[in-house]
Length: 281
Image 1 (cartoon, rainbow, N blue to C red):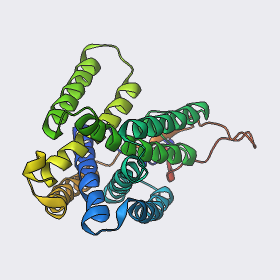
Image 2 (image 1 turned 30 degrees about the horizontal axis):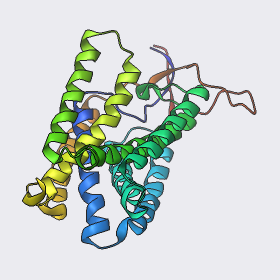
Image 3 (image 1 turned 180 degrees about the vertical axis):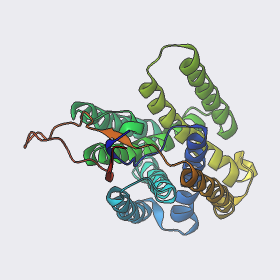
Image 4 (image 1 turned 30 degrees about the vertical axis):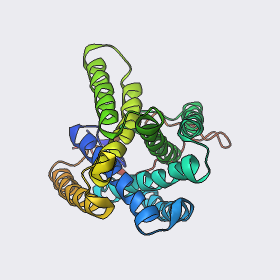
């Protein structure tokens, strides 16, 4: 239809999205451990380094005018990798413990979500159309991925479940959430964010199963070996998504949207993607 549209910066939430999210968060666990343990950088230096790289990548993402799969998933991987080292620094290097790490990071995520909600932005990530909304999305992703690492460590270590039983518990929780989505009237946005958080500890525990030694319940692939396999799988799926979007571009969001107002100027906030005009006829 003729009119103005803003190009999407975030993908549709599909089965492919969740497959990529799980692979990205699993890679974040093994890659984070690779930097802090295998390379011997330690959790603090690794966290600072990875956060710096994340800031560069997310700045490029925020400046992009449309959705680019390789860029988007690179930023997600960096939030997960940095989240692993942030969580490990809180839990182990600072000796605060896994339960305290869950409490700190969970409280931080709750504050971000409250600020996001109070700002008037939509929490439906498919319809995020402003720069402020996208910034809040990425801050929430950093906290949720950090929280996921602490949650997975708490289940496996703090509660003494071990790696593989922790994976089974998290799998059961996600299946229950999937059933609730299809068979109840639970809010879809709430389901998304619960699933987004749960896939992080699930991916973290799967990453530990792949990389840890058999004495610790793992497959003994090592951090480098597990990361290489996960990178290869991600390259294939991201390449597939890029080709699919080239054949079937994401439909843009129509303007005028009910964009949140700038609290200082009273004007609608700036769209985060390129605005295009479709002429009549």
